[in-house]
Amino acid sequence: MININGTLVSNEKANLSYINRGFQYGDALFETIRVINSSIMFWEDHYFRLMSSMRILRMEIPANFSPEFLEEKILELLHHNELTKKACRVKINVYRDSVGKYHPLSNDIGYLISAEEIDNQFFILKEDKCEVELFKDHLMVDGLLSTLKSNNKLVPILASIFAKENDYDNCLILNQKKMVVETINGNLFLVKDNKIKTPPLADGCLNGIIRKQLVDIIGKTENYELVEESISPFELQKADELFYTNAIQGIVSITKYRKKEYLNTIAKMLIGKLNAKARLI
Image (cartoon, rainbow, N blue to C red; front, side, top):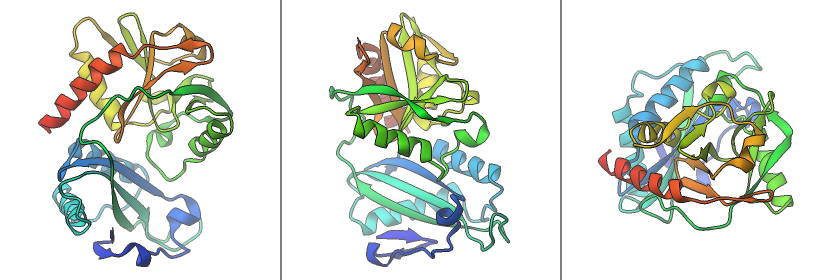
């Protein structure tokens, strides 16, 4: 079952109109959240990112759209799907619920919440191969809109097709200044000696929830310096480690870029600290 505008419906009956603006114009946002045994990981950060994104897109936030209201709807959905004692991926979609062409006739919103079971109760750093390559066919444009989790994801989609066709496990996405912004599905971190770099939001990378947690964790970790700074493709083969982050996988180590193979020592250390922080939420 999924929740559409507060009503639980079966997957088979969960239909949206063809005039839905999320479908017609990409006039929509989404939030992907990890839930463990009915505990929503980093819920406050997810909630405020969603509210901030809705304000940026000039969507009308309903008066009842409080964190308590949405949490109740998430837990209600998990209960009906028998997922309250499981690890889950929950997705909240918000769309402008209005007729009109490019100009909507109102800024009212509709929403839906879906959930599916995932494998692990905690973040696990897998030892799987993860070979990456630069995706050069299309570029991310830096700016505020690029930092949002909107439905406009053509660049990552095309990058994922490129990766599949060329037997890569992921791709590194560039902005119009030819700086490395992120991977297909996560924020990028580069380790060189005791410095850990991640692209600044001004470069157009996603304002990621796990990115935010790691910026905080690294800032409190002795002997390592966190720098939010543009990453040039020329730096990649000089790095000791590369890894990316997202809300479901936590941290994923990149094992190879062209002829360069990477360690995962810092990623292992950080995922332990990330799990410890998640358990305190």
